[in-house]
Length: 236
Length: 206
Image 1 (cartoon, chains in turn green, yellow):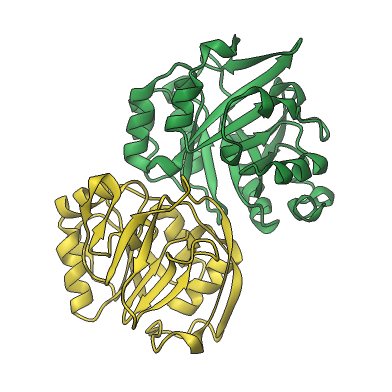
Image 2 (cartoon, chains in turn blue, cyan):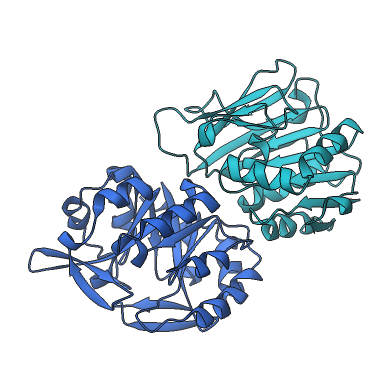
């Protein structure tokens, strides 16, 4: 199982998030990546935390920073890839995998198919921001900036088109080892293709290993030396 | 020494360039076949085999790469770039490759894909008579022992008993993780994203 990290990219700067609403600035993306390279992080998901007010121009400006990134750690990138025009801007980035969220939630198969042809199926990840409220699970559609019932999402399509699915626990985002483990039982997705993030700590990592998940992404802490990624990887 | 990286708009050539330059070796991304002049050519690749071969052929890189190898030049293929060195790939309904190595590409058995870090080790003195044909001595290392990052759905099956091949892993031991034959090196993992092991490997290869 891989142990990685998430970084948020917003207005060309790097952030980490709390509670799905608050962000803490980290400075330049290159400096954050240099640290994660040094800590031998297994992978980094660089996510633009965009909602319903994104534009191709803002997307393009963030890509300028990503394009210049020098990193020796596998990178996945997503947040706001919503049209063919967005896809065309992705070519040549120092990125191995691309993360689609609203496109999957809206069942935009044409867009995902185009991405698969360009980058290969192994390069396609689906991000589902989720929350459990009163025993019911909801999926956040960033393009509409609202939570939807699970019945609105075509999980069979996601299973077919996505190589891996990232489950982001929005309620526990930035929390201390509080990822809601019931989430994976509530979604009919193959465990060995699941990546979890949102409140990931050492006990979550141990649990994810036992469950045979593909990866965990620690959304906080890993850029502080005392909480380096090595500590999480070795912690059992 | 200079290294040319074939750039057909598919693959993260910037990461490859960054990887080479970490060894203080000049690397450049080449978009036009006439500019392909260095002694070492790197063929990177991300995506699926059909569209990738189409782009190589459309830009006349296919014949130029074959001529480069026939003329004694060195070739390093990475991931899909390694796979299309073979004669045939199962991907996209069956694709004819460059036929530079005696190997075939098949879909990984019993799994959707392989997105993992794996241990990777070899000794230079156990390379089945092959060498990296390094013109420069950037490293005195003779043993590499580390970990490398894989992200693929198809694997290369080596049919050449004289080639040197390191298997992908214990579970995927029918597929080549690294292949060396004469002046051709094929690498299935992403050395440019394999951190310290990737850096040590390129200093041994170049």
